[in-house]
Length: 96
Image (cartoon, rainbow, N blue to C red; front, side, top):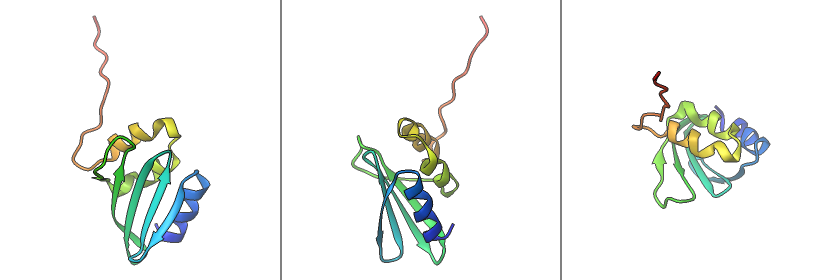
């Protein structure tokens, strides 16, 4: 996704957007920080930092749109599913 299109989508969903050379987009929403680095017009890497964490974690690039669209109460769940190297939490219901 092109940086301008991502910026527009992020703002539409309530994220504040900062840009830096590279280009790097820094998106903020409800104390969450999502940083996306681009190579040309394509995202190259992404990292997310939760309000309770001081270290950012790498995010699967395919998860960026879900994070952008998530309701504030759902960002933590989407972030857990998006973090590279972590398996999503699943609830299993067992029959008695």
